[in-house]
Each structure stands twice: as C-alpha cells, then as structure tokens.
Length: 118
Image 1 (cartoon, rainbow, N blue to C red):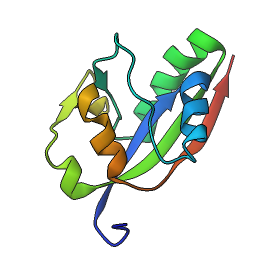
Image 2 (image 1 turned 30 degrees about the vertical axis):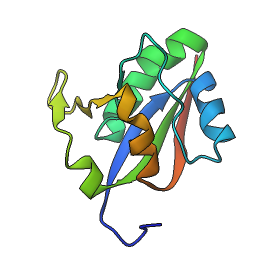
Image 3 (image 1 turned 120 degrees about the horizontal axis):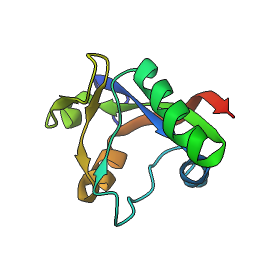
Image 4 (image 1 turned 120 degrees about the vertical axis):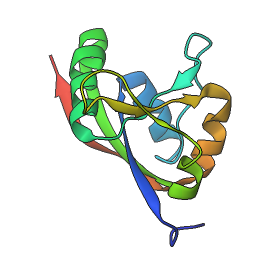
C-alpha cells in the first residue's frame, strides 16, 4: 500500500469487545460504530488514551487496552484536532460514516501497547 507516505500516530482506548473485533480484522480495521456512536474518537497521545482506558474501559468491563496505529497524514489532514479538556486532551472527531475511509488509510497494524485491569 502506501507505507512510504508520511503518517500520523493515533491512539485509542479499547474495551475487550472492540478489541476482539479489531483482532478478527487481523489488527487492520476498526469495527463500525454502533448507532449511539456517531463519532470515532482516536486521540493524539498515549497519556490521554491511558486516562480514558482507566476511567472508561476498565470501569465498564474490568479491562481496557491502549492501542496505537498509524494513518496516512494526507488523509488525517482533513480533520481538525479538538481539545476536550486539559491541554493534553486532544482528539480527532471522525464521523462514523467516514470510519471505513480511515480504515483504508491505516498503515501497518493496530497494536495494543498497554493493558489495564481492576
């Protein structure tokens, strides 16, 4: 594909159900959003992803994962980074209907870089 293009590193907290679907894709794609999830929110840094994982995923299901993946910069340039709190709380807002396009621009694999449990 386009492994030689410039990429942006994205992080995402994931629970066990979502991670299972990522694994079923060969670690190459995020699953479609549920009807109550109109936006896909990858974040810009590992610290923020860790905070979200611990406060949301671990609380909801007893375990949470921090994932990291690369997306072609040219694709990500169409999205604005939003600040959702403190200066480190920055994220992209990808509309659910554009998630497949994002998946098509992932370079390499979606990897788990940390796991947290109760």
